[in-house]
Image (cartoon, rainbow, N blue to C red; front, side, top):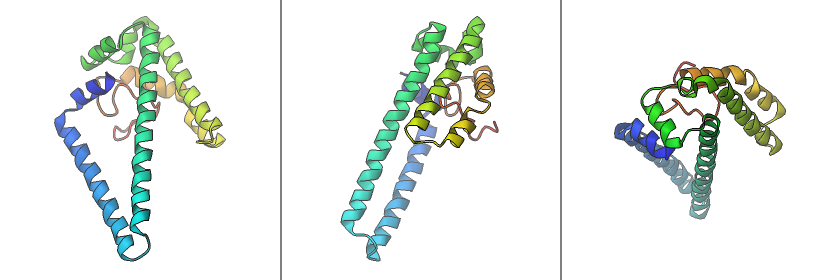
Length: 173
């Protein structure tokens, strides 16, 4: 699966670091909430409800993210007529999506722009975005997708399969 490939390419050190950060955030949140209980601002029951709501929200977000990522990979593999394993293998070998697509590069860009546009439209219609936000997300979408297809190499954090169609954080892009 794509998740396994990403995990392999990122490595154990990065994963441990991510786990450490999560533990740090959890500890900070627990300290804040426990402090509010000590002050009488919140009850233990309220803290439990907050923590359970956060866990449920994170599980839902992770599920939605996985679904979108799978749909993104499917757009690529269907457009190029290749398997997910071939896509992953070639990207792990350092090929960009443009190289993998070859003469189908234009079709891939068109398909990815349509994918991102549809996601923005769905978020707009469900009230998750305002019209202004949707417009800003769609600005220069063709240009951003083209740049991502041409420059994406390998798998890993913020590389290769940036299925959200956004600027990649921490990469100066």
